[in-house]
Image (cartoon, rainbow over all chains, first blue to last red; front, top):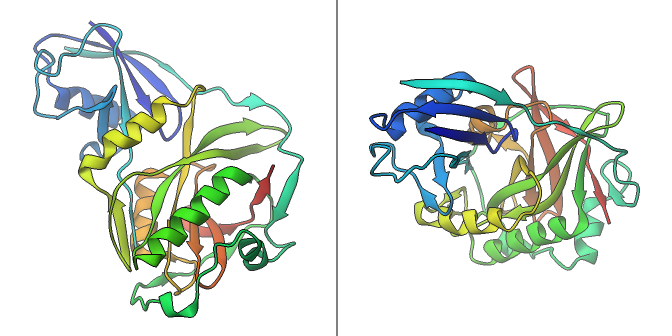
Length: 77
Length: 206
């Protein structure tokens, strides 16, 4: 299955090929490593939902062509 | 198996920067501008903060533009939150363009429910779905060009926690942080340059 990951901070996208037995966490780690980001620091969205890292592809209901997006979770003081 | 097939980098549109500026930082007084917009608050809303200030040098070249409506939304958000003695925060949404140099334009802002105090702010976990709704309304290939948050009468500067956020998320050369103080009448923009905090000029356009 092919999906797209979007980095909201830059607008860049990567196209990724994944298998049904992959987990959301593995996808996040792969994209985060590629962009040199901290994997756990982001909120990952699929449409209007937050994707939980511990889900499998099936549980997350990811489908071919889906776009998931890295959203920052800032803190100010 | 996971395999990255290809990367599509965002292409920067070649376009002159906005021409109809209504305010340019360094040439006008932002407190007067905020006064005209009716967003300044009285001294009684002022809070104290022990936050450590990170010193910043100043960049002279203008490469950050904010649409007037987005600016007013931020001002009013910061004012309303200050009335409840809390900091405000949101994303700066826009695009990155090129005209002799790279520049960023803020067309809109997005916020949602916050976990906030007089000296701290972040999004509520449950608030992200509100933010996603807002992002889905945008009909162009947006970029989060930065973030804004407020300080309640202890002036506009980057604190240690603000710098951490900037380094973690908004570390590209076009990214900025706006810090708004609706009590002292200040709005300053900052960015990271070679891992150092730099105050940058900005223009508000119509």
